[in-house]
Image (cartoon, rainbow, N blue to C red; front, side):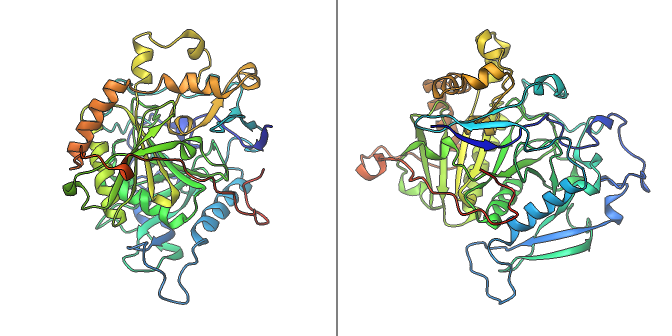
Length: 434
């Protein structure tokens, strides 16, 4: 039996200022649009969410931020922007369903999306490309699209300030902004050090920031995603995406097999597994002695992929405790003419959300006939071959200072299937509807 949801997928215009891009750098002293550029942001004030430096410690003060404060704040501010009319589309208008099957792929229908999509403005065969100020970037976003700054508070407790001056002397601010064409309720963009003009490439600092955001949300239904260039990122300005959905992602339900590590590779406490019986081959990183340890290991893997021109996608799940890493080759197969015309005609671009099992379809017929088999056929084209995956895995392990053990260990070889978690009761006014 199909479970029907009311979720909306919309064109990939992430800001109301995106179509005005192309004028290059703005003059200093204010552009008159109250933007996130050097001309306006340094003399502005914005709300600040200060996250705890060590999320594993419990709040020590009575007035510390409750564990659900962050997600309620984000969703409330997101809905406030909706009432202001800042979104381009009604996010309840699109048909969505959970496809019957073992994994429960989520299919969405958004007819015409491929006709409205903004063309990609950079090469799709290069994972690393320099930042280009003449093309759309997030410094051109209006401040009304920003929910708050997201900064390290330096202590054991989180706190929120409704307004605070922008401090750029030590470090450019991290901002959380709406995606004006949301995929889901609460769809936002985390933009690290927005004034530093960072291209779309992960480093340890930015990845740790994303893990802190997931930890602050403290909800298994708030996930962050990352797409590299060549893996369907559409803007070459460093950003993560995130949204809230009370339906388990298929990849979260997939079985995994632990990869045994030699003693020298266990210092971080990070455990590594590979996905089993899932259409896209991927690695799963989890636990670790701290968020810093998890960030060190996964960001090292991402840096190797970037430096070696391997496109990839990342899903941050389980409040930052579990990371899925997917090296992929769909764009390469497209360029080589190795993707069937039947799949190309669907106009589906398999980025992180699609790979995780949340698939947008543009044609009514594809949606009506969607099945686990059709989802599997599409995503299987994204995956590296087994031989190539094992080769890349070996390089990733070397880059992350992980050593696979070849000593037989029955506990390490076990296949784990996650136990599904029932979604929590939805409180009045919550943006997630079923």
